[in-house]
Image 1 (cartoon, rainbow, N blue to C red):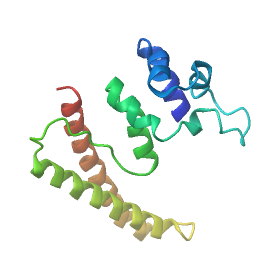
Image 2 (image 1 turned 60 degrees about the horizontal axis):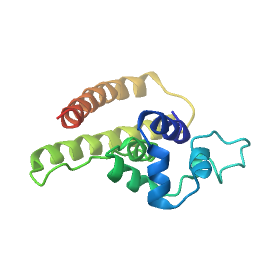
Image 3 (image 1 turned 135 degrees about the vertical axis):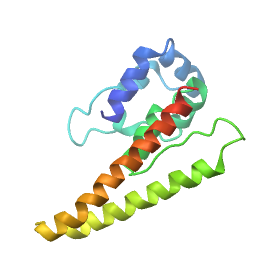
Amino acid sequence: MQLYELFRLLTKEIKDFVETLHSITGYAISHIYRWGEPPRTPQDTIATGSHIPAYIIPIISKHFRNNILIQKIAAQCGGYFLPIKSKEIQLKEVREILIVVSKRMEVSQKLVAVISDGKITKKEAKELLPLLIENVSDTASIINYLEGIANE
């Protein structure tokens, strides 16, 4: 899902979303609605979701308690957005997440190195397969942990 599609989803799901955003930011309501539209041409990014001003994203997150746009941007950058809901965050859990993310980066780097020549040999496939399978289970554990936080 593209950023403009997520923005459009917020305009539909959150009551008075556009009007409230207008009162907070001063942007015209019609301009805010354009952020939920796809670009008309590849060069058209000024008034569409691909060009939502960066400072608007944390305003949406804080005011509407919705992190979907920040999570999308983090994912596009290859990262995660982990909201901290209390000061009692478990350092052990954060450490575990960082270890998994570090492993994932290592696997990604190995994968890029292997496919950079445009082919994967049988030996390379045998070396990569266990790493990717392990990475999937680690990623699943992060997802379960984050879902637990999100559903508290």
